[in-house]
Image (cartoon, rainbow, N blue to C red; front, side, top):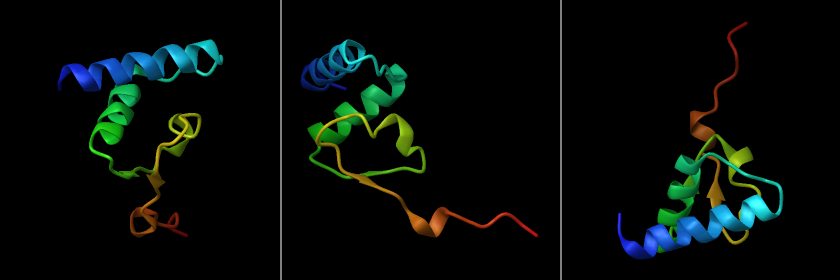
Length: 69
């Protein structure tokens, strides 16, 4: 964690709240780290990240299993 990540997290949090789409701060920190690292986020919880402009989200299909019959 560094000042640049925290500043990005604050920016994301403010923008999401202004748009009426707040998400948990833990997810905001994850997003800020993803931007800092210029990385792609692998997650199955896409709903919290879909409203963050510019974030690259990867859904790892290999982790998605069908429910047992």
